[in-house]
Length: 552
Image (tube, rainbow, N blue to C red; front, top):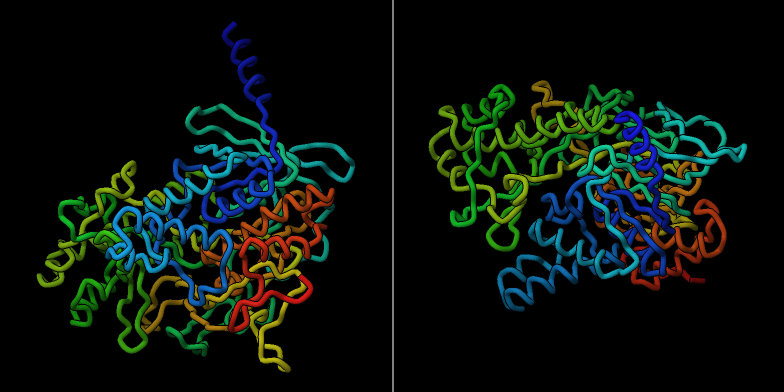
């Protein structure tokens, strides 16, 4: 009898289903932008988020916005900034230090970022947010018209094949409610938007993808493959073979610190603390090259006496710091890893990051002056209150990259000889303007004392991002604005959260334009999508000043 009841319960559970016009997976900035953009067009939208939080890495501590030319991104990113400024103005006054420090909405506290993203979702009545839901499978309709469980996508190494099998249409995904283990719901929609940093849904649905570094020969990119480059120097050093490997750039946490003793909790020695992790930093301290706390990590001031922390690069004149918060190589398996392995990597990274701060506060080999300076800092008591005041999100700088209808590479930033400007795309739907910026891919090598292997920082003029990088090969009914189609080098300019928001907004608009016109998102009239982006204040072309192309 118990067995029968269990079977009936499982059958009933699997029958649970929800229908929407658009299903968005991941409530990070791109996911919020996708959902809000679609809902503003009248679509019924369901947002699935695996964690208990909204805002991805931005609500997880990345609050120093990576953007140079602020006019290159508009639309919903501008709404986010406006709400940030409005919060600090309303709470503290227009002439307050908090308003000044937030710098027009580009610098903020993590919990305020999450509040703003939640407010943006709540403002649209057509959006349903379901947290603690993990996507576990996908169903597609094959070329024979039969619906079936999708065959997961395969990894591409090197140049993409000309044919990777027939195209299928994604029709549903199934997610487990992590707050009620075993409870699963099927979600059906006309369009799915995979906003995960890792491209998890695309891979489940059968989209081929890349992980790691292509060789220099694959796309003819000067900075591809195995490479050694000094900070802000374009010239690869001897030993730069350009060979492909599985490497992705290092992760770290973008946590916050404060000196406000009334609003701080102490840094603790991690249970898995490994002093040998910091041997190169300790060596530079012993040599007298490091004499201050902020020579090891970067600190960015935020409102209310908080400072965001980031890993620092070796300075090309001193080689300091040899090591910082970035932990290279140990994240290579993250993009394709399952939940258990990602939890293990997460724990390892946090142990390393908190351990570095604890070392600088407590280790007897660290001079007293540095220890005294470091000991002034603690974790803000009012941040990450459900996670021991430690970040709930690791900075996944790079996951899978889908094989799309167009692959963005370093060469797309090259100026056209006649104009001196980067090439335009007929289907341009956003702009990227930040440098090609890859953190280290491999651990510090003493043979190269002024750099970390795999690092590069290559400037370029702003250039357009084509709609086709969002559209995966082999799978219809799906758009991928975060784990989009790019080479390892190409991805390093568009991997900034304002750009992800722009690509997410374009995806939400395209999904509804396709549905309303009876077309697929692959075959949508991109001109109509471009017109709507511009109408909503988005930017699709930036050449010294924002320009709306003629004919739109």
